[in-house]
Length: 139
Image (cartoon, rainbow, N blue to C red):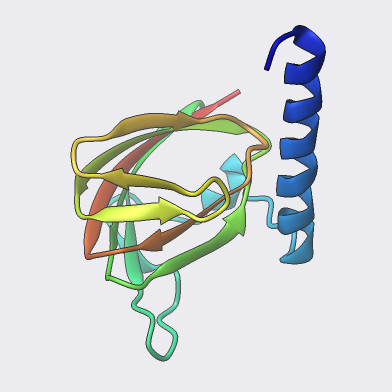
């Protein structure tokens, strides 16, 4: 890419490709308040186990009005369907295992730390049993 126009054309093409993939599978917006019903310290099944794919357990570790910390443990093969978060930023820390973001084709493994900004679609598939902690900060 030689100039700003090339970069903008490339970025636009990437956005269109992701939007097509995203809209074809459903627009699953998950909001900060969607976690209001969860009790701190209690484990919740997510996603529900399906035939050959494994399931996972989500445990809310702490919550304030502006932030929550969630522990996720997933079995190999678990898939968190494509979704985005309109009103919070996610900061991930992978404690064990590995998973792939199938929207961006990025593999994350033990020791990785990264951030996903609001409105960015992502879908996780666990390549092996995995554990991660996510800090969600309301914007």
